[in-house]
Image (cartoon, rainbow, N blue to C red; front, top):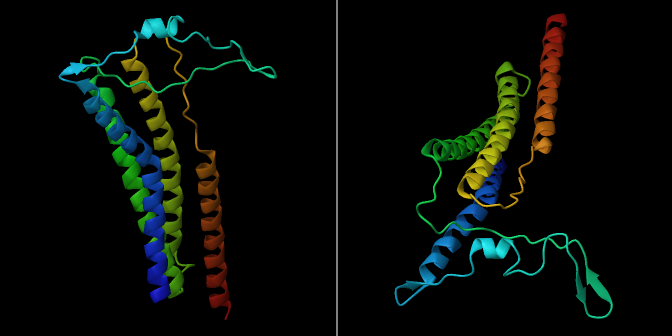
Length: 215
C-alpha cells in the first residue's frame, strides 16, 4: 500500500510540475517587468530610450530584417532577424475586459482540467491495486481521462490564440508579430491511445463475463 500511495503522490507532483512548467515563465516575466519598471526611475524621472518608430525605420538599429553584416574577414551574417520582447509601459494602452476575462478563464479551466486528470489517474491506480481494472467503473474512469485530455488540448490551443490576440491588441504599430501558438498533437495522440486502451479493457471485461458464464 505504501508503494501505491507513493505512486499517487508522484502523479500529483508530475502534474503539478506540468502546470508550473507552462505558467512559470509567464509569472517570472511578469515579475521581471514589474521590477524593471520600478528600477526604471531615477530621482522621480523616468528613463526613456529611442522612439519605437526610430527603432523600426533604422534610425536606431542600423541592421534591417533580411540584411547582412560582415564579421571579421571570414564570416558574414545573412538574413538578419531582429527579435525582441515588448513591454507596454503606458497604462492607457489596454485590452478590452472581455478578452482579458476569456484569457483568465481559460487559464483557470486548463488548470482545473489538469487537476481532474491527476485525480482520475489516481482512481485508476486504486482500481488496479484492488483488481477491479476490468470493471465498468474503471473503464469509465479511463474514458473520462481520455475526454479530459482532448478537452485540455483544445483549451490549451484556444488559450494560445487568445493570448496572441491580447498581444496584438496592445501593439498599434507596424510590427510583425509572430504567432507561435501550436496545436498539441502529442497530447491528442495520447488521448486516442487512452481510448484504445479503454476499449481493450472493455473487451477484456466482456470476455471475462463470458468465461464466468461458461464455467
